[in-house]
Every structure is written in structure tokens, then in C-alpha cells.
Length: 180
Image 1: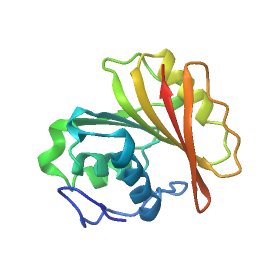
Image 2: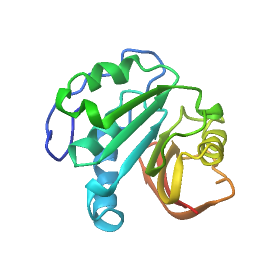
Image 3: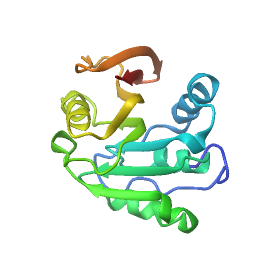
């Protein structure tokens, strides 16, 4: 695993230490960032990313490398993310970690305008986590949401989320949605 673009392009990340962590593949992550840069993101400094089911933290670190103002990583187990975040000492003021069950998030202190969610495949966690993030005030109006699921997994977006487009890369489907 490595950072694909931005300030830290090429920087190697630690692979998952814990069983059950399945990071988004470098090629798929690169494609997602290409899509973001070509139609959704005009200036990364305007974005605050919420990464739910953060795992290794690779997506959040990629966002920081490209200039994101701030990232918040949420996971029930943060060991893999902490290990990779330690590789970025200059960015620590922009990083927030929260150990929490994504299905039952606490009330948000701040809102985020970009969401990345990569729940374990086919475990029924994505929809409850999206609903929790919305209900607990984590998502700013017009928040852009990128939701990774297994390509055959059904996804019913909760009320308040509008489907923009979907893309399939290998075994993964990426759903782009807007939170209203």
C-alpha cells in the first residue's frame, strides 16, 4: 500500500495488521481520486473528510496528501490506522481519531463535507452506519459520499441521500451520493 498522489506521493503505508481489514486497493483508490478530481473536487483545501470504517486510514491519508483541510477516522479498532498515521507527523493537527461503533455514533461536534465509507463486505453495516452519521449530525448539507460495497451487495440509501453514480472496480462497487 502506498499514497498515490499529492505531497506524500509514493510514501509506503503499513499493510493491515488485524484480521478482517481489507483496504481499498491502490488502483481502485487512484480511480476514485481521479473521479473526485475530474468532477467533484475543485480545491482539496475546502474539504473535511469523514472516514468511517477507516481500517488502515489509507483513504484519509491520501486525502491529506492531496490537501484536505482535516480528516476524522472512525473505526471500532484503530490500531492499523494509528500505525499509518504515525508516519505523517507534520499532519497530526489535521487528524482526529474516534473509536466507535459506526452503527451507533455519538453526536458530532463538527460536520464534514466529504464522506468515505468502506464497511466490511456483506455484513449489513453500511446502511445503519449511513443513517447514524446523518442522524448524529456528522454530515454537512450537500456532503459528497463515497460508499464502497462488494459489487453484488445491495445498497438502499437511507432517506436524505441522493444517488449520483456508481462505478465497479474488481470486486468493489463505489456509490457516489449526495447528502441533502
